[in-house]
Image (cartoon, rainbow, N blue to C red):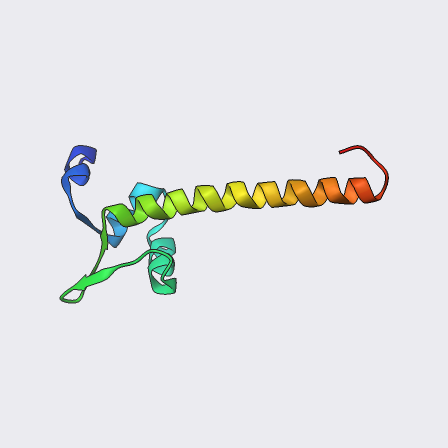
Length: 86
């Protein structure tokens, strides 16, 4: 399936959603099973809405930025307590 065809879809198969976020098929199944990426069933097939991978990526980016900020603050606090400049 071409990139243009994928962009027109409103729901992806697991393999397609994995390709969107650059993950393996098994990692996508893991994310769906854990509930990190919401999914739904069409009969026996598992589908992921088009916006779910995009929202997951946005969440990961904001979480990563917040974690980096928290680590920087902790490092600066440790330096301050040891009498070093941040």
